Amino acid sequence: MKYRSKFFEIYTVFHALVITQYYVVIKCFKCDLGGKYTSNKFCELLALDEIIHWTLCIYTPEQNDVAKKEHRHIIETTNSLLLSTFVLSMFEGETILTTIGLINKISSSYISGFSFYEKLYRYALNYYFFKVFGCTCFSFHPFIERSKLSSWYAICVFLSYGEGKKNYRCFNLIT
Image (tube, one colour):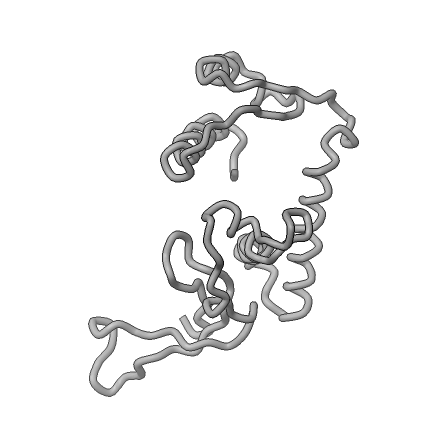
């Protein structure tokens, strides 16, 4: 979420996605007493959908311990990826997306050795698609973007996985 003012729109899209793609309903929404989560418009939406709205006391992070630990895990893993691969800091956003994707796809003792991905989609993940973060890769140029004598591939750096597609997001060092 880039701007907090977009929260309501993002939530309504997310709510529809959960219902249509995963066939489940949101039962409870837990948040702090920040203004964006307690607006009349948002509270009415939750009431209309019969979603319980729990609010935590402000300035008490211990009440939201699970989210704080997960956030710290994401940030520390992202920092490790950036430091170990010498990827430019301008790609922090891509690195965070990659980190979250990896955390969701790696098995967890929290859910009996399954990954969150396997629990959500109910089938085992194919790990063949995984690539090493920051590795050198070659991006294929489609026929319309090349001439007979130009290269079919460009040298790139792997950054993250494509959203909703079976592709990769790479940084072209030249262009």
